[in-house]
Image 1: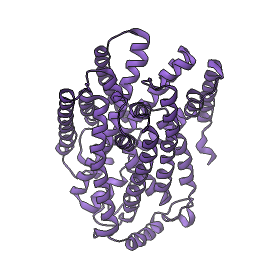
Image 2: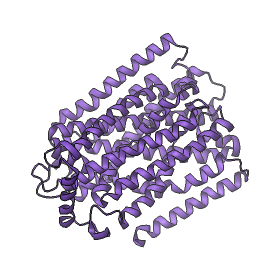
Image 3: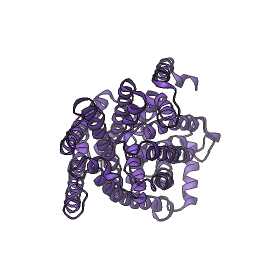
Length: 483
């Protein structure tokens, strides 16, 4: 069972989740008070709360992009694929994950040129294609945000429960709750500040683990020792359909299949996620193009560096007496739960490694979840409340609706993650099935909504419906059987 990796008491899990979350909530409260007191930017105005007054510079936008794209899956699943497919896993994850961020710069340009006053992606669809298309894409956007949020919270709650014995259902509710607390206080600008702070801590932790594996730790301590241990691991735990069944092979059938799935789901979770559109909307016109390439390049090193160290390190340390499941390798359940990196951290640093990996994951989960919370609240506020109920409502009311939307989404997300836990659906399953569920929408969405094409609402909806039908047929046939 996953709890075989428990090295910390349940109180440590509650302390990290509630304690660090509370500290950030107080920090954001102080920042927001100073902003409201000494600047002209007030979080009580809807434009500031939901779009940061469209005035954020490229540095903070880039930090926000890195933070939003650094999920629990970025750390856990990339390490899982390094453990499962060898050195090609981190390379594919980093390279293909960077591509949609780089290309989103083109969309950011079109947003600023064609829809500078937009608040959300479905608002643009409404202006171009009418109500039916608007409702369709609003549903697609909310579905994507729910699935992305589930990946974040499910991954974080699984690892916290595994390492500390904390109740997984409590973790599923507390993680969204503490994030919602500081998002409600400060709005979108607060998420940018939190993103920057979280990303600094995240990079420090990743560098610590990287140097431990490659330079300073007793179990490994050098690239040469890591190479030798991986050669031994290839003999004891060979990887099917890798060249020579080796962890050091870039030619991997399983890794290539994973790369194709990540390619599709990666575009979906960027181009259909309101969080990334919101960053383009919040940026200054002259900075939106710079921010996305800078963010994409900065993000590449996170999955590639962390997964190479911790995923391959997990395989290399399996026969070490300090390994938490020694003398046995991780079970399939533990691997699918994303526990390869935590297992390596425990083998390298003991309880200190477990604490550091928990802090690292909490930074990743909360920063990404904050972006999802403010994104969904914007969809609920501008695309439902203002569009269909109160078109002429005042700014203060819109802020209150945004607050309610944040709380509502946090509760729905927590309940959905509990359902996933009851169903036994793991983080790895969620990430790989995400592309199957929503992939047909993304290429159609970006190909039609922003570029200067005018094929009409009928063509727009027929293309989306046709893609959905193909997705359903292929899902029923079972694509996995082809491989």
